[in-house]
Length: 284
Image (cartoon, rainbow, N blue to C red; front, side):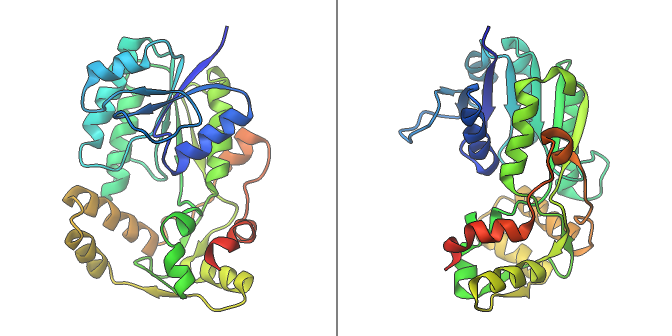
């Protein structure tokens, strides 16, 4: 009997890498989208709206395992509750939740708190679960920072704090292991990091070395970054979450290393220098 996997957030940074990894392994994988789209998908698509549990339950019916990745949006906590109710109604047998490093419902940091509150919903859902907590993505320098790096200066509100940046391909590989055979991982939480913690300045130095030209890092004060996000029209809750994430980095709280990638995949995570060599063409 086929083990059917449904991936929520399949078009995002983690989700797209995960779908590619599952396809490479020959898994039976389908993408969950919130609304119909003409955008091409490498896998079949079902439609279910996080704001409408009835549509979610219908979309989830017939699947065994749900990879639950929620968009960073003001209603994220309510959407998580809706998704878990739909998963119960649809007969989902296991939920693999993509959370965030440091998630804790009692944290004073807004982003860690909301991620921890969602994790608690998963743990109390009555469904078998596994939680993955990845740290900062190396791919952010491709997906969001490529223009700034090409121009020679990266601006960010991270101060001199180091980050245990992780390659999204390693997150995908770790998640694929759990999704292929969830039972051994029931009730487990895995922290996923890279093999080293680097400041933004250190990351830009490695990129500079590979490109053969300088790319500098300029620190932005937290209040300046917050004001810029608010002025862009970003919802207040998301501004709070991202500001707290910047504060976490500045305080050095994102530097902790973990062995989740090694434990799940049987190999060490990719280092940042390897990532830079493989993506230098994006910044040239």
